[in-house]
Amino acid sequence: MKNEIKNIFFILIIFGVIILNTGCVNNYLDKRETVVYGKRNSHDLTYELMHPKISNGTGIVFIVSGSWRSNPDDFKPIYGKSFLKRGYTLFAVSHLSQPDATIPQIYEDVIIAVKHIRTNAKDYGISPDQLGVSGASAGGHLALMLATKGKQITGKPSGLFRAAAVFFPVTDLLNLGDSSENLDDGGPPKRYRKVFGIDPDDLAEWKRVGYDLSPLYHVDENTPPVLIIHGDKDALVPIEQSEQFLKEASNNGTTVELIRKKGKGHGWATIILDMRTFTKWFDKKLINNPKH
Image 1 (cartoon, rainbow, N blue to C red):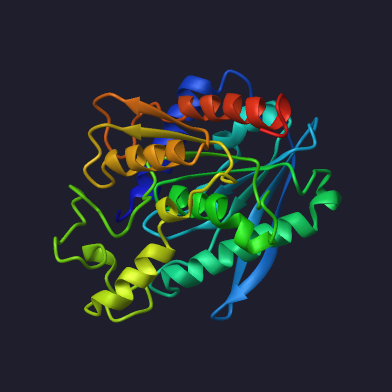
Image 2: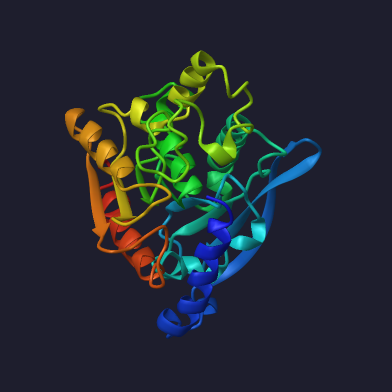
């Protein structure tokens, strides 16, 4: 997963300008501000708050993360143009990157971010109970963690989010399959062995942590509807990760839709076009059918 978030967002900005920028994003963006939601190891944790000019009263949280590394500057307003155009308030959540933070700590911090957003939702002109969540790769993993485990955080079956839409997420850390990160030793992904906060050679402890941090094992009837877009030639996060998530959701009566991108790997040149697909998904699940 090394550097993939930079590659994904580089693709987004190049093709976003060339393909989609038929109207300036400033036509839809009212203002942008950086909000501090917490601290980790003396570093400020922030999210970029992007207000649409005409709000629909609904917010989308985008987890900015690749390889569980994060930079507040990685998410530009152009990436969220289709959301802003439709009146969604955007929250681009960043976290302290590994190895300065462990992946369990990163998950804790994005929970804090979402709680901060929900607490201040009315000040932002949105409903705290009508939020969507999105992300790509590691950001998709964290987004699905929030979606599947939200009920544990709020203590309510409705959880944190009403819908999710993600690109090529890790869903099962314990079964990496044909991933290039799989050492076939039953342990953590090879380049991330030391960032889970445990002895990577302690397989019993890894099974506990890997289970806890795998969205697949937390799907139930209360999981919000999820849209996944995944390349069927992804060698880093094989599409089987999403197919297994789809199967588990179906077994629990939960709505998950999987769009398979034929011949695509871990990111593709026209990925920004799929942000429009995400927007339509959130329109359907949050605006047209607010109770799913």
